Image (cartoon, rainbow, N blue to C red):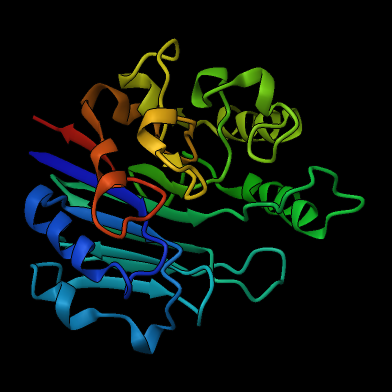
Length: 268
């Protein structure tokens, strides 16, 4: 039995609905987790996406900012929409689903970007990001509610030197500062998560999922960062058969600045 899970910061699901529809038609993941949907729940394009075969949809959205959604061709059971840091933001959604006799718990996260100044004493946005990561310490790979867990989303941190175009130049840039990268790796390792993307794509290789809109020619400059992640329970690692990072999506018409990532499993 195969399973595919995709994650994509879509940067407005209604604005980029044609891209989502095309992606679902072409790649047909079993489950798609979206971040930064920027859409209140009652305005989410349920009908259009259900028409593509994704009958099970859970959303946690708000007007104009943030928001996450999980779409599935497999029935979903909502577990939690957790509010982190008491900010009123919609940045988390967890569901369970059954696959080949296994119950899988799936977390969908959109971690705060953190602003421009990497100093929590003078930048409230950076303080919020660090506090958010601290609260994520309760999210473990081993969970009594499921046989296995997956955590995906825009975590807004590029932890490895090869996750950014220039380690040296970005050490003082939010998303790659030591306090962020060290905190994220302690969270991942301490809570038992495997970095599934780097299980397939060696840590020695450059790997990006985001390219800034500010670049005149994003492809030529290739100043990317790996901000989007797929983690999993160690028990899932033997079943992981592939990882697709759709770099070409950054060049689609009116694209998001993030690209989709798809993890593929085989439980046979």
